[in-house]
Each structure stands twice: as structure tokens, then as C-alpha cells.
Image (cartoon, rainbow, N blue to C red; front, side, top):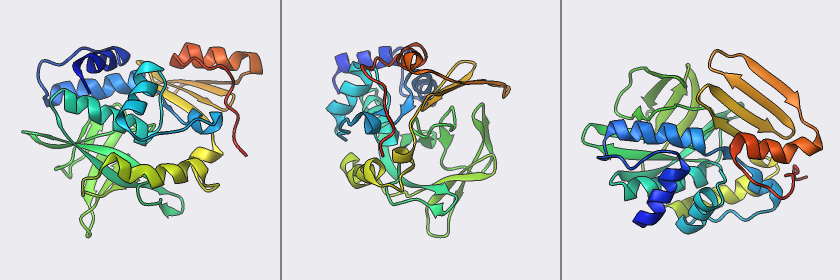
Length: 256
């Protein structure tokens, strides 16, 4: 990523180039990203291709001002962080669900190495930590997203807990972005994939969160109060524009 593109990315997430690639700046960058770029799977239901390469991801997130899911969001964010001087590795994770762990390469998260130690950075997991998490600490780590804890498994993987509930299991071997192509294909095409069976666009706000699931709009605040209503067809595209800054020519429709 060149300097011009990095500056455009920083404008996209409404922040400025940090003075130094340190922990404080990393925290601010993650929070800014979460508040500016939505977690969304609209491409699947619009019939759009998802290409796990740096330029197509930047074209989508920065150029088209769209969002994406983990492979896209963390893949693009890793490129920005590297340009800003951070040492970044891609890590594979398996998401914890009611039936156990998901498929290999189910999720992409980032490990950022700083002089203070390794940090878990993740802007692609929906409701998650607002700030980076220490990967070398087994203590509770509290922030507005919840109370998080990271525990090493007997096999050497890392389990990430939020409010006592397991979220995903990280493998510690670094990966390349292309390693996630099969997982991304499965998420897009398998009838067992939650992304194929649901339509969601969700973004952290300064006061809570806004989510559009299909035609159901939910606006919540930090205290748990929420407003929910079902939109009619004429309200859908304006809702994407107003709440997420996403300009669409047609309404995404859940694939069969």
C-alpha cells in the first residue's frame, strides 16, 4: 500500500496518521475502524465476487466505502497497519458455535508485535473487543466490548473468551491471505454457512451499535436500551445510506 492509499484509508476511518506505531495508536486505529467500517455480508446476497487480494479489498472498503466480513476487514486493516510501521501477522481461527468449533480458516484475526509484547487485533468479528487484547496475558481484560480473557490450550492454541463465553480458537502459526480462500468460498457457498443463511450489516457507534438484519433495523445504546422495527421496501436503501454510508443500487436479497 502506498502513502496516498494509506492516507485515503485513514480518511475512510476518520482518523489521522499516528506519530508512532505504538500501542496507544493501535488502540485508536482499531476503535476508529470499528466505528467507520461495517461488518457486512451483503456481497454474498448481491452476487458480488469476494477477492482476497490487497487491491480488490482496498477498492471495496476504501474506494467504494463498503464493509465486509473477517477476511476482508482484517485483511485490509493488516495492509494499513503494515504501511504505518506495525509488524503484523495473519492468524487463522475457528469460531465457537453451538455445535463446537467451526471449519479450519473459519475466521481471520491479526497478531501485532510491539516492544511491549504481542497484541490481538480484530475488526472483523461483529460484537467483539473495542480495543486490542494482550496475547501474552491470561488475566481478564476489560473494555467497553466486555470482559475478555485469553487462555492457552494444551495443543498450544489460544482460546478467546468474552464475558466467560468462548468466542474463537486461534492457531498461532502465521498465515498468508491466500490461505483463507477455501474458507471464504465455504462461507459464501455452503448451505451450512451462517453468512449464506443470514443477511447482516452492523457497525459500532459512539453510543452503541446499529444493525440491519434483512429488513429489521436495531439501534442500541451502551446501556442495553434498543429500538427495533421492520422497514418497508422503500426504506431499505436509505437505511444503508444513512446508517452505514453504503450506496446500493438494489436491495440485497437472501440467497436460497
